[in-house]
Length: 112
Image (cartoon, rainbow, N blue to C red; front, side):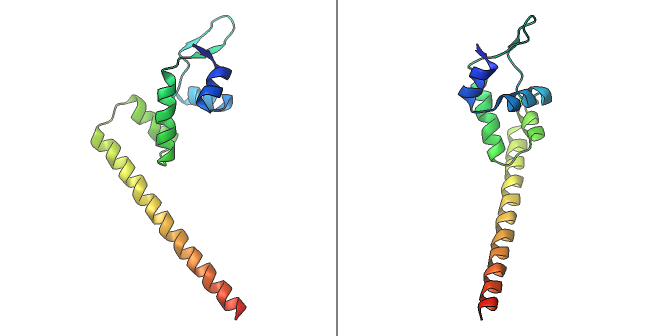
C-alpha cells in the first residue's frame, strides 16, 4: 500500500487530482486510516489510473470515464462512445484547418 504522496509520484497524478477523483468516485483510496485519515492506494490501482488516462486522452469526460469503469457498459457502448469522440475530433480538426486557411488568406491579402 502506498500513501497518497507516494501514489501520486508513481501515478503521475497530483494529490489534488487524486482527491478530486476520490470525491467524484472514479478512484477511491483502497484504505483510509481511521485515526490519521491517511489515504492508501494499492499497486493494482495503477492499472485503473492507466485506464483513466487513456480514456481522458480519448476525449472522454470524467463522468463518462466513471460510467465505463464502474457500470460495466457493453463493448458496443464503449465503441460507440469512442467513435463519437473520434467524429468530434475530426470535425474540430477540420474547423481548425479551415481557420488556418482563412488566416493564411488574410495574411496574403494584408501583404499584397
